[in-house]
Length: 310
Ligand code: NAD
Ligand code: UDP
Image 1 (spheres, protein in one colour):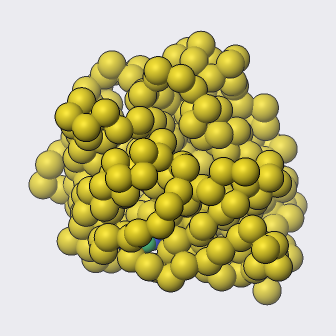
Image 2 (cartoon, protein in one colour):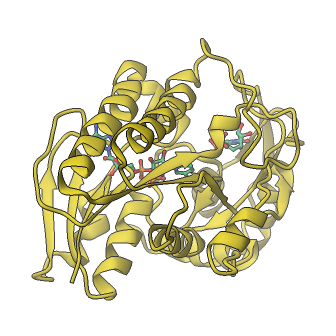
């Protein structure tokens, strides 16, 4: 039995990961400050004697004896990470330093939940891991993008300097049950608007694209990445099927049977126009991993979750 620390474990992705790791017979410490995470995401795990919940902020050091660390603590949606930009960058950078220090002392393997945002508004399409990105260092998304880029630098420096066993995955837009209902991300926004019969708010003309990965496919990639030998990444994980935001709005309307109308709102600044992962490295290094759940199936499961959300 391994003892595994999941920072940000009460969040959307973290809660699915904790569940998976417990199901595989591990002991899980879920660490969270509940900024965007919620106890209801992990309430069903609390009776498991191998699950431990810790209220803690990763900007402060944390001490425990662990075998593996998944570092997910960081607000992920633009509304939440821009709410307190300085705190966001502190969470990424100081959180990485604290968790890498823990990994160094305990000789634990450590996986960083990085992001496709390290590519910024990419000039290369689709994005491969060797693309260095096109990122605005002083814009409203920079606290997140540059924080995550700096965390990747720290991970690699701890690896080179201290031999820490690091793993970096770059996550592209991921959705599914337990997304925060108010986090403003496009999938949750559209589903909630459609279920409430409200207007669907497409920003810009809706021609910008995203590739949407269902959360179970991401968790599978994370677990496989942690199990790799002599591979640090970074590796992209995402679903390469690309959709315009307008297509997404139309799909959500169709699947919910909603009478909602599409309305157009201004495009936020620095909003990337195109994003699509190249996942050939993930396929090669993660034992043939590829996404299994396509958009309509994943949206249907997510719609079901939001319908039942009290
Ligand atoms: P989320 O907001 O649901 O989860 C983040 C969790 O971290 C929350 O539970 C939050 O309370 C916790 N947290 C935030 N700051 C903290 C701090 N200082 N100390 C301790 N806990 C803190 O978001 P998510 O979608 O589950 O994202 C999880 C990770 O995956 C994040 O690191 C995010 O950057 C990364 N990621 C997610 C996506 C996506 O599409 N969901 C895409 C790219 C990267
Ligand atoms: N978006 C939108 N309507 C919304 C929320 C988001 O049109 O109600 C757009 C947003 O401008 C972006 C895309 O959907 O082009 C994805 O936004 P999200 O915040 O989910 O993720 P990110 O921009 O980080 O990829």
